[in-house]
Image 1 (cartoon, helix red, strand yellow):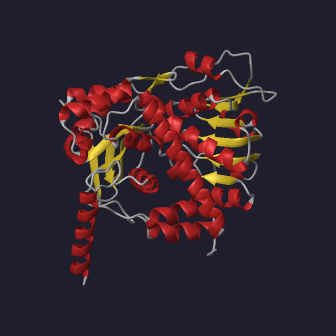
Image 2 (cartoon, rainbow, N blue to C red):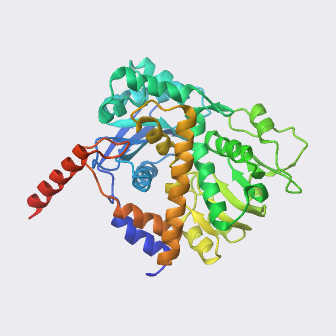
Image 3 (tube, rainbow, N blue to C red):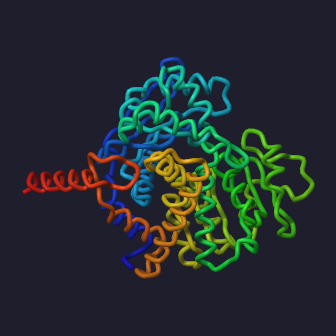
Length: 422
């Protein structure tokens, strides 16, 4: 292995994505003065995709890094699209949030119409984004998919409606990313040869991603023994599974109910001290630093949140023999669901989409872990190697299998590019 883990990562990243996004649009709000950014990582394909977040202290650098991570998610998933991300530096609890977000989305509307498939991210939901784009006269925040995939308007809108159909405790739009994160956990448990009914999991976060993962894991018999939100941790004293469905029913604004007597409340950092098989950071970036990585008593970390583990922490986890499934894998459930929804020639059901996400995520985890073992490199580095080896297919549809025409077009484009270089 070349040098340290961080040096090795940097070497692969340099050969996988652009050093800087090809396009960054900066927004300065005319009413309140806050800033926002849209970063499109590259223009290799017809479509780019990624969420919009509202986060106090958000920076341009963070948005750029998140866009780069989204490109990696597309590559690891085999989706022919590029990464993007956008957001505003704004307090999500402020009363002006909805109008602030509306003004920002209005400013980037031309990209949403033509190339950028937008979705929810930190402190945003599908419902509020649907309302905003509706006010802007758009049928969907993902209208760019219709153009890139070649859908007739009626077929596209029918498929989009599937996201609002019931799925488990919620609808498909809100459960899809969490179901993918849960599937990544199951892939790890399979690798560790731990029966799901015996497995113990701690989840940091209780927003849309975390709660969806908790629901899916609980439904399949995994023992979720600890949760944390932005204020507190909620920990089972004897590894008895928490009443996930009851907690979800009572939860508001991503917070764990504060009056339960079935487990112990601690401060929000208490979850790092819980011994368990799998720890799932599913809320914020830099959730695990070197400090936490040195003391966590876990067998694996499965990262749902973007940039959840610092490079220094990854090094420590690797040295301690703790398996890491990085965000570019475990966090791509939402992207996989888009392929499950838009890739098939026939209109898929909610069950079809969730099954597709589960099966493909498990395959990605299995493939990456096999590569990690074969090359004797950390899991993230194995994932980055796979991303680097993915072919780029300009001019093709983002979702579904390549057809003969697509393959021919790709070959012609590659030949043209090769001639231009020579």
